[in-house]
Length: 83
Image 1 (cartoon, helix red, strand yellow):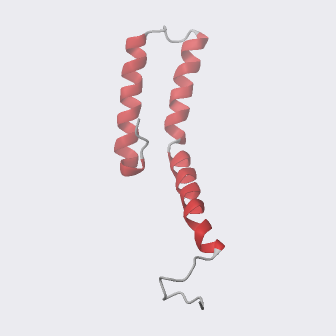
Image 2 (cartoon, one colour; image 1 turned 45 degrees about the vertical axis):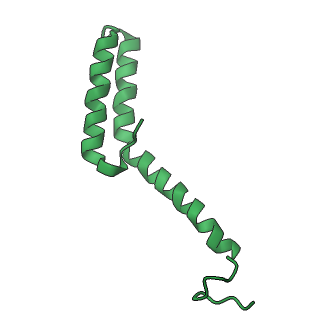
Image 3 (cartoon, one colour; image 1 turned 60 degrees about the vertical axis):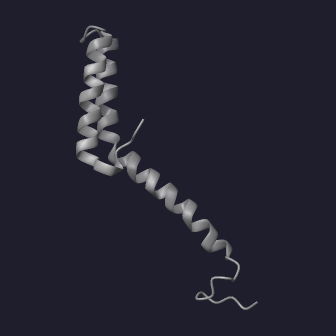
């Protein structure tokens, strides 16, 4: 069978098969890059607790995570990570 781009019955070339996975990798990299400021805020909070600048509290940690999570969803919209 002769390969033509317009014929849907032709077998896919290796290049056409590889593109969706490359696209997923690019999407994942973009989402991780956009979420970096929020991850840095979480890391800074954890370092402040470990360093003794903030008292360790499960309730305060929960409130901080809810605040950062809501800011992430508000800022990134559909690109924000979901748990």
